[in-house]
Length: 114
Image 1 (spheres, rainbow, N blue to C red):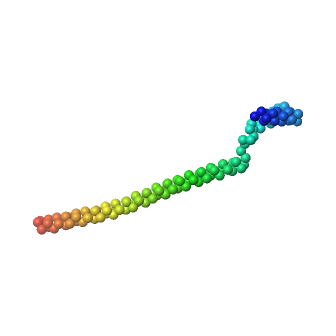
Image 2: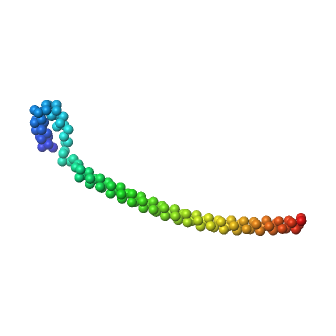
Image 3: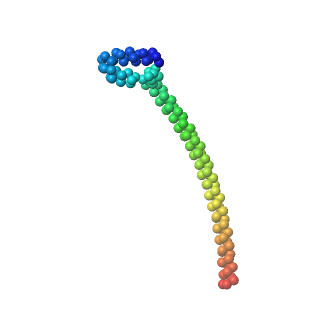
């Protein structure tokens, strides 16, 4: 850090004569404290690629999970179809039974009262 401070001081001294004390101070203060740690465009591109790869992987996981859920809904729909068929058969049987009972009762009533 001392080497950088020395370089800043030299730059300040060079600029002070050209642009004045206030301008030199402002300019030197705008320099980053550790220029060796600044990100380059290449660094940003690598980071962007890593982020996009991570997002793509997460979307693939979510897509797979939705596929599993969709498969489960298919199973549930199939079960509802089976249940509907069973209930329909039973209702038809019940209605047929009641029809026989009502017809028998009507025939009996017509013979008895008729």
